[in-house]
Length: 128
Image (cartoon, rainbow, N blue to C red):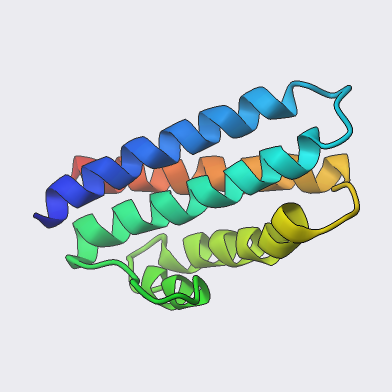
């Protein structure tokens, strides 16, 4: 059961990342950065779920996504870096999804880079 959940969450992560990258390519739209970062955050959460499901046999079910950061730290050897990537993405969640200002291009690039890193981690974790 956990392996099928891990595979499903990895598919979700890849799609969210694909959407983030597609939206980010639309540099003329004023709200594109917010939507792209929001999708990158969702990609990071789903990738973290996939890696934890596979490696630990469970994922965070808490309403507080930061609990997933603590769970992710348990992965070896990449857990601490992955946890940091997820924490930084989660720090952008409210700003991108509920904020009224536009997200800076530098934050967008960092968000996509961190989401990519988490999707790569999940992909490698599921190979083992």
